[in-house]
Image 1 (spheres, rainbow, N blue to C red):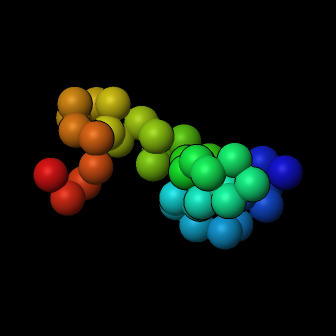
Image 2 (spheres, one colour):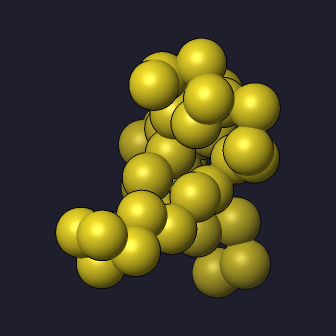
Length: 41
């Protein structure tokens, strides 16, 4: 499943759970390094 999430894109909505998932290391690491919750802030 992890591979499938990575292939779908940087942020994926899992409608069955009504959550968003980030499966790529760099996409998760970037906000935690900058202290931002999203790149748009």
